[in-house]
Length: 311
Length: 311
Image (cartoon, rainbow over all chains, first blue to last red; front, side, top):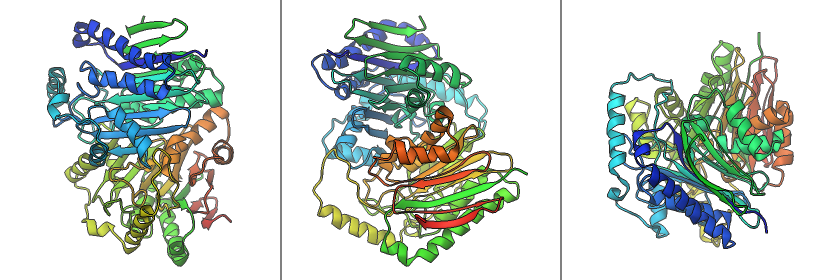
């Protein structure tokens, strides 16, 4: 039997009092998320179904910045972004700045499966979700006390900061973006990523998480990757596809490719960045340059664990 | 003096009666677009300013599917996408599904220069454009007879076609997406791309043209690339960044890298695809797998031309 492997992440960034206070809840959430996808792989299901299930779990868990618990934009509203990619067909689906959809990654998958397009945003994305009968929730469902506290403190901080036009400001955020990668019994890989985006973002801001090649990338020729962190930096380096390109064109194996990308090619990037990755043989890797990356992993060779900090 | 080079494209795809009928107008438009950017380079201006100027010209020219003359979506409305990237700073800006902004690529640049983000869509993008006083135009400005004819025939064709869920249908379109790449006297490269997107698209559909790494990519380490064609295919292969990755990791020069990507790596892709590219030394290349790619080029070493078909 081929090796199956499931990895999830729940965001990379600085540590916080909120994280310390909720550390057991985060660990339990990560374990349950990885189990949700792993069970599907164990029963012979596809990597694509597995990553969707793991991300759905994290979207529904309000500790994470995706689905319920999403960060609020400048107007204190929730707009969400997600993407999914199937390494077998190299097909993908994505959604940006969508509201009221309970599980944005499931909408991304429906865009992949049921439209002639890959990527929809805002009004059109919501109309499509309504048309196909996806589960919608009122604004109140998505908004948590913690997200509102983050919004309030971000607004205060911004009021106290001079605007530097044209210079991207790294503001240390909790970055709870979630994602999953998997390889199934057939050796097919898949990746999925979902986020509420940056706290206090400009309305309509599209997150890297929704961009094929940045938030998610999957190709059976190389690997599947999901990323998290300061999206504006990860967009510029096309981080998920970049891992695949390093494997394909530089000839590195999965772990070496992730290590090379994060610790050599992108070592001078100021932003927080984290990646999780698998290859079709069940090998897996994660790398992050931040204080912590919420993560969990499980394979059919008995590898398993949950981690938050560098350890 | 370092070599300066300017290239523009006006879309890759199948030939059409409309193109044949307007061939002189297209050639004149491409020549004027390349001149608009070239003049800036000649006067010592930046590649970034040059690509913006060339794309602005093409957005204003109603023969091309960007700005005025944009394709209409399923509701017969105009929603536009654009991106710009500076190879010196590796910074970028992008906008998706925006309405009423006369020059979407200028909005993409303003998002790069004046916000903490890279990528905005729809309502938030329009609000930001209004806030900074960008030129807006009424819906009627953008809509041309030709775009409405295309819309009508696409609607009829769709009514006669069975829907194949989950299977992307290649419908041969005119693909008038526009783009430019340039290298300036300092050896800085830049890329910009702008489009009205696919005729008869689902409202809210985000075009590849607006995605950093797909529509546009620029990095002084390697090259600047702008792409055009069947976006859903180009997203999956992250085509613009892909050229850069092939140069960096496979060690190919610009022309070889473009040739390798289009004629080997992506040779089995069914969709229409075209790219234009420059490197910091003023070398340039273009490749397309379609019947035609509208294009023009001009360099300080006397190279110049305008082309539509393979010749």
